[in-house]
Image (tube, rainbow, N blue to C red; front, side, top):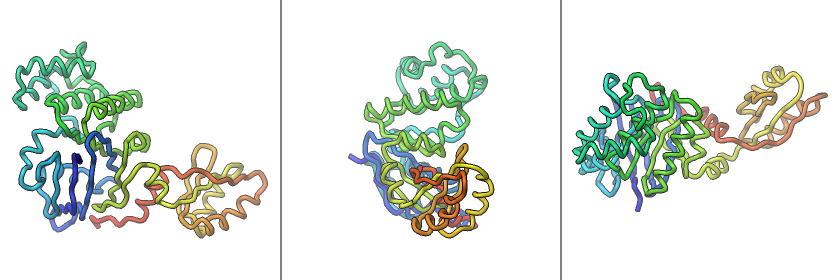
Length: 305
């Protein structure tokens, strides 16, 4: 059964179309990464899916409930972690979770709080004030609050922004554990390494969904050629290549340049004089997910202009 099955979603604000005919399917137990530039419509799409916003057009079902007629039922079975952690800074972790348990009418509330503290490894910090927590611990508390009522779908809106690499890895380990137990996860992120940890990804650019599939499929379907240039005077080489035919991206990566384009033949012709230089080496490289997304962004038109 699909946890999310929506078609033709449209949302407008003040005459501007923020989400434009977005269709998406997410299977039960799947982790799907939702990617795109700032202002691309990710948050608005997520809010429509969890029943917080009503689409101006489109239809679909979330967890088997009609998106337009049964939004309240969807809300009861979804966990939504927003970009900003929502908690009371002058309450302890335990008190914040107890408040959430009462909101969901979980009984007995104390037992649900105890389980959440134990599952997310927060028992030893239960009496620490939320306002004194580091980014990683705030994130962990927010996740505990989102899953305490045992939702069937977890919607995460850039959940790891501002946390350190270890906290991010631990967070993703927990997400995969939850998904293995049957929870469906839709997560928006700007981190390429996080996108690669998802079962599938969908890319939205200024309101339009333009790519969907596994990471391998999305990279393959972009049909980009990537070459790696190493050697001397890379800054001068980069400057000379930026306006060359077939060159669509030039980016330094450590002691090398990554040169990317969609017209392989034109790209190779532009690289021939570079490869002929003394002390310079040009070799074919592997196109990365970041290369693909930068390409998507360069081709998109900002719908807010």
